[in-house]
Length: 246
Image (cartoon, rainbow, N blue to C red):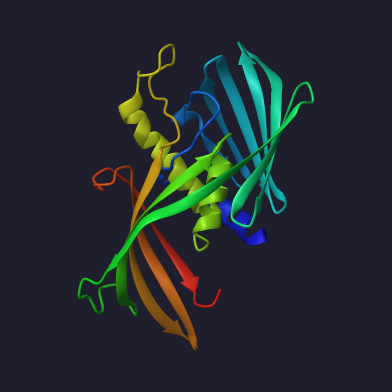
């Protein structure tokens, strides 16, 4: 869990980058104001619009898990709505939501990697100093579950791609939401332009390189994230380093 959380925090700290897409099944239609997302240290905050109004979500990430507190906004007032406690267990984000009346509901969220393919393009050594090219991987990531929040979505991605820091995952999500908002502006009735739902899928192209240092072998992934299967809508680029055997 500590590794998952440190990863989530890394993703959160890289919030200026973009996000990939993933599939989620929220209990109701919800859109996020991408300009409201604030990621600092272990805190994620943003505004979300649901069918019955506007909500403020504040999420705290720690070594024990994620605490998401949801408030209903009425004018200048914020009224407590519910709290979601999330932990990562065997690659699945398990969540318990307790509302203002004490009623609880348990849900799960997981990320799934599909459409995996690998190829070698004939490269040997590129301008990436000291690293030898191995292969190029292509795959997609989808999120399956309910009660999706930015931090829990990041945790699910980190759980399925364990070499990705959590903070980076959150940054990818934030960037994806911003990119989706460009096409979604003004679509939702009664909601201001510039809002978007969490994307449905994340399409990844990853160049994999290998290097060796002081007897240790490392793999570096140069990843491009896209919103579409044709890989034309680039969300952003991230680089990850992973030590063999870990």
